[in-house]
Length: 129
Image (cartoon, rainbow, N blue to C red):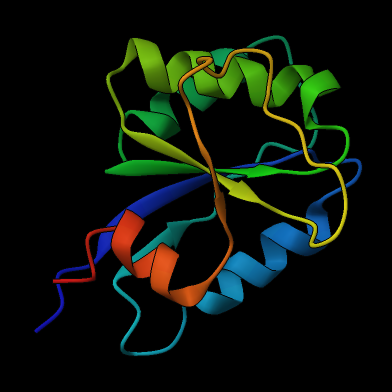
């Protein structure tokens, strides 16, 4: 039996909502090794960073979808910083094939952006054994 990993999705709400929805869809089949904690915060309130911290601290991993504008998406960088501070493992996914995708500013220089593929998703979430 596959043990499902709870994954928080960090993405650029203005440009990559379609990619987030694709990843949520990929989590739905019964053989998926991960569940999406779909706790996106659309409207930033004064306490949105604290809400994000509470949500990120309750998952096993964070998936960061990297698109063409992720390097300028402040919310994504804040969420990556929170994952780092909370010691939540995260991985970066190349969101747009045949386009330039960028890491969030808070990503480490050593963070690799992985090709978005089913084998990689299984490997990154611990489903490939």
